Image (cartoon, rainbow, N blue to C red):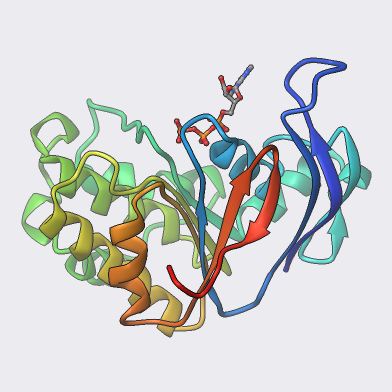
Length: 224
Ligand SMILES: Nc1ncnc2c1ncn2[C@@H]1O[C@H](COP(=O)(O)OP(=O)(O)OP(=O)(O)O)[C@@H](O)[C@H]1O
């Protein structure tokens, strides 16, 4: 699925942020990625969808070595990975439904109206379909971001601090959707520094917790 073998990465030549990263995302499993601010969680997620390439080591996404792929092949591979970014950007002049549908047009696919209605209903945004992004609350924005991340039915969903600006109730509502995705068979990886969120989620779904510390990855203890 997504496998790293002794991967290193640095934004600046000669200074590695991440080293010796060995990771295998288990198909169908829920994963958390935790670690202090600035430890490299976003960077690791970007490696997972080949937005960044390793400076050394091997990174395979869906059994393909990303360093051997051309730009078009990487674009195809990214369609199988849905990403909820930390700072979700929308096109403010387009209604929510059209923002959610953007990956379809990028992929040259048409919108299935019934599927779109179901998707917006699932994230509880049916009533906001014709609204514009600036009118959405923080929780609504993140649910719209999640809908957009899954509209191409990806195999893997990566979410970068998806609950960063949300209160507890909204955070758990979003996590519930990620749990549902996982229960439907998707592999999920959520980066968060919120240990309470990890504990509350682990009460509902079996999850692996990975921790970045000192520039490398560790499997966190069962006490989390
Ligand atoms: N595009 C970039 N160019 C140079 N340095 C960067 C870039 N993006 C991130 N960094 C640096 O890399 C380090 C790790 O950043 P990253 O965003 O991956 O950490 P994080 O664990 O996700 O942090 P947070 O929890 O605060 O979001 C930080 O020191 C950051 O300043």
